[in-house]
Length: 309
Image 1: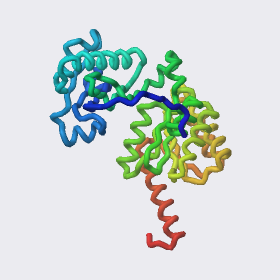
Image 2 (image 1 turned 45 degrees about the vertical axis):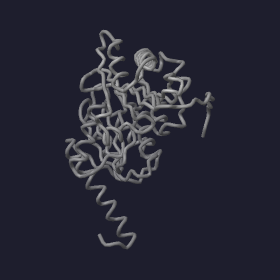
Image 3 (image 1 turned 90 degrees about the vertical axis):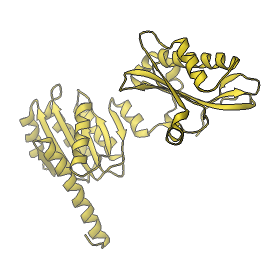
């Protein structure tokens, strides 16, 4: 659904150019990438014509330098007043990247008109979600219909969620632990359905919201909960699990690994709940149990369909 329309004057195009600014995490620098082949995916250009791509790495202490912008323009084969226009476009794109807390600025195409002017005809930008509170003008333009509705709902509940393609739903506290959990699921032969970090204050309500969010994905056949409690308390998490199972009418296998603060109380709460929960002490055991539970679910589904197991 279209919510906004931008009307622009049509211009006669002589050339199309690609210009992009991204954060190179390896170099810890903003890298400017340009190609004389605009109007197409830069990934395809990099694969088919890597020699057509020019790059400049920006030193954060001084920002983009005029000579770097000129080097990009010359590398794109621009001449005369086109160079001046390209330098202005590069400098402007860098200022936008820096001043608006962007994570990516992509101008595709940056065109040279028949009159020799350099214009940005189509621009895409992404921003650091954690900085939007200080960028109200940017936040006002946010179009939630273009985002994964599960990620939008997660943000409303203070959860960090990214949907993936697997069948084992993950509910974890801490981004690093969530990544390790997904790695071990893959190591055990499974595929995670999501990244989900419930954060440091895992109240029963937040855990219940996490369950509802994970179960909104119809591909999820097993749920793995992995909590290492520091600020959290395992008994809080256990109460949240019981509350969530009752609210969402959970019908998939549930594997829970609790460790840390009040772990014995948390395990006791789960053991006395009467729910069918597979509890483990070690993360690798939990990942292995989740993968085996998924295999059992698929085998049962095959039997019901009359297919050979």
